[in-house]
Image 1 (cartoon, rainbow, N blue to C red):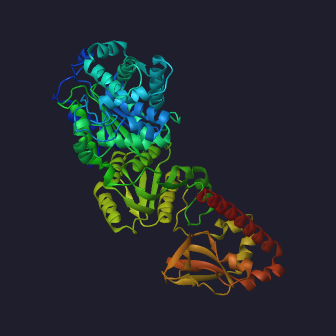
Image 2: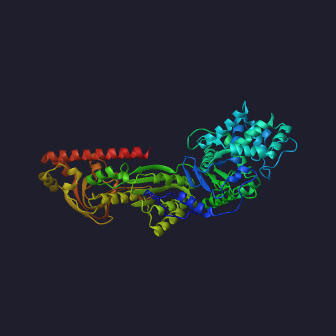
Image 3: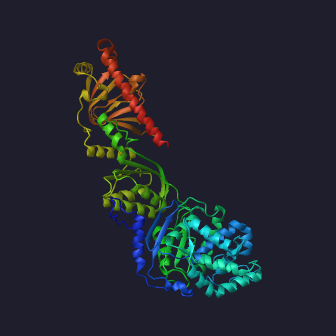
Length: 622
């Protein structure tokens, strides 16, 4: 479980991403471990500092989280094997490669001589015998071209140029007697079809490539991303080869620990005696840990412990879920382009048009997993600092993993001082999700839950308008002069208009207009609130908009001369001026200039509403 930790970056008002905070805590937890020994069978590797320790996580859209010594160079060693195997698959195809190298776990150590008795074929490409055979399958006219192609592929996977540590290469070559024996045995069986020494030389060089934990995370994320490097967008490994590479990583990548690893950790992985371990979650992300002290099997001690915690805490086991990462944001917009259904006077509407971008709305969809939530939080963290209100709509969320919700709640806890208001909406369709988020809201006070997104929009608009000091007061009584439709009318025309109006009062909940009523009255809302609604087939009603003092309602049916398509009810005590249709018609004879001005203002108001609606439709349909 991710514990909410309110950590903030010193130079920014933005809180730290909760995944970064979790990785920092994980690093602190294991940094003091002094178990294991630095590899010594290759003399140059003994120069590694056992205190070096780095963790890197790379997502398939190119974001990298790092903690510790993630930029410390070290040699890749056996982690090169999956990438060289990919190159062999690209050069020859699956069937031809399988004729030379098996895909069965050996259950033996990485340097064991595990060959099929009849054919001499290595059991798999992750043990040294199979890796040497894979290096031999890399097409090249010369020995130099072979290693150049290997380094080039690994560089494209890492998103930067890699180089070989010549001192480690010499140390490996001078002490690699067992690998020489394996190479000549493969030549004896015809698995290697030419002089094995140049192939062995390339193998020693590939294991001596210098990488960092960050490089390994990006290289592994390239496999998670179907062969496309997430930093550069370049196809580094052909997509058709990736499933085969990940398969042998899952079954053979951790040698004689592979079975327990896939059982406990549950992700395709590869370790190296330089202290690195990579793990891949296809379609989501990749992890790399670097720490030189090794256990008896040749795997990084801290690396094993970190992967155990990551898998358990974040529920990363590959077989626990068949989900892949996808963008869970169905739609994003702000209150400047899509406002609430509440009708507002000109001053408020103008202020929201100018400043409504401070209210951000995210509509989510599908299944919320840890790394889809990670991406959402990352996007929210990148919002401009003047965005002060955040609304997140869960209406179309089908399911949410516990780690995803833990990550989200950790972010909200850390971001308490970042937002004026965070509102979660549309939770009622999922009782468990609704109960958990509402309970946590009551406990933490870092956000609130409101049933409908439109009500949340209205709430945030009210708060923003109050902050801007342009609110006119929802319940303050209006004068006729305050109505947009009365704009440009002098005192005599206002008096003439008032003379044809009838004052009407309605109690809370009273129906002012019923759907289907004849269109014979226009209403000027003077005091209180009134909501426009339609009847649903299931017997319930749906609010279309809410009118406040200074608003008209009922005018559309008057202009169209058709029965009412919607109803209006009082939200509390309401006072209205009513203008019967026949009174409006009599103005033609008594005050034609007043009627013309009213109709002009009607038309202008309607045009503004149509434009606003058109923009909202454009945004919501994008």
